Amino acid sequence: MHGIFKELIPGAAVLIFGVAANSQTSMPAQTLDTEDEAQVRGLLPWSHHRPQFAFNSPLDSTDAEATAQQSWGTIIGTVLDRTGAVSVGAKVRLTRKHPFLSQEVASGNTGQYSFSHVPPGSFQITVTAPGFTTQVFSADLRPGQALLVPPIVLAVATAATEVQVGGSTVEVAEAQIKEQEKQRVLGFIPNFYVSYIHDAAPLTPKQKFRLAWKTAVDPVTFLGTGIYAGVEQAADRFPEYGQGAQGYAKYFGAGYAGAVSGIFIGNAILPSLLKQDPRYFYKGAGTTRTRILYALASPVICKGDNKRWQPNYSFILGSIAVGGISNLYVPAGDRNGAGLIFENALIRIGEGSLGGILQEFVLPRLTPHIRHHKRSQP
Image (tube, rainbow, N blue to C red; front, side):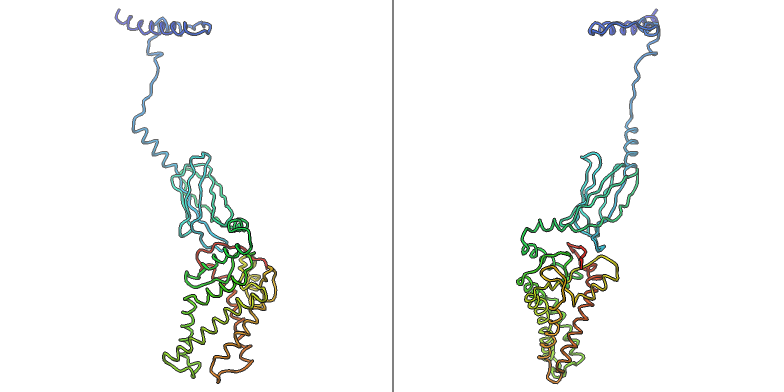
């Protein structure tokens, strides 16, 4: 008897709950099938239709988290400029489908960036830097994958640079000069007379003289003159100067006078009078042969202030003038007249060609923090 009540009581509870629920709805009554009717009457055991409950243990949750972590991936890449040098401080943004899952880092001293604990799936990397066009890379990340993104190369955004520095040509040139004055080979040797912007704004006479003055009084200019003076004294090139401190001072004075006269005559005075640009314009594109020819011709071909290519009268006449001036302060016994003047001028032009080769192929890689790199069109 006790067993019968044990089976009837749950059945009766189901029946009462069903009647109460049925009285609170406007839906028409449905005819129970045989099994449902049997359950209501308690003819089937409660265990046949009792609800099923699932309980997850803490160990199950830990296993799920471990599995999720194992599916995370890593994304690594590098940001470069057009010359292949690393770009430091570029903003690298990682975005996925969900807008709240984006991450942003800055490229390090080696130009490298990385994102860890990245969920698998499609993603997009956006690289931005002042003065450069935005670069975008998209791909899919597999579970647990360490993906190495191909190097992202930044290209100069000329229009963006112009908007940033203002509208007038003088203001644009002023901003570009400030960038040039930061260019130092190996971080300390001045390299002010090269532009990495192919259509840089022409310089005013005032700006040409300012750039010449900054070069003439740079500590490296004094250091280089001092080393050269020491070499000449050791070789006893001009015996009339003598040895010792007094002789060294004469060598140093003659050397510095020659350097300053060359800087101002060839890069400021004549370029201002002839309306020519004294800078070397980095080409950076094309075949190796065309770039070599371009560099070799730089002492005899230059850009005018009208941005058109023309014979480099400033450098050629400046080389002759410097040769003539230097012939005045050497000892009288070493003055060889016009022949020596033109010989020195040719040597100076040859040095300019060698300098062009270095500017085109070597020095950009040795000059840190170059901001603007773009191909120059001759």
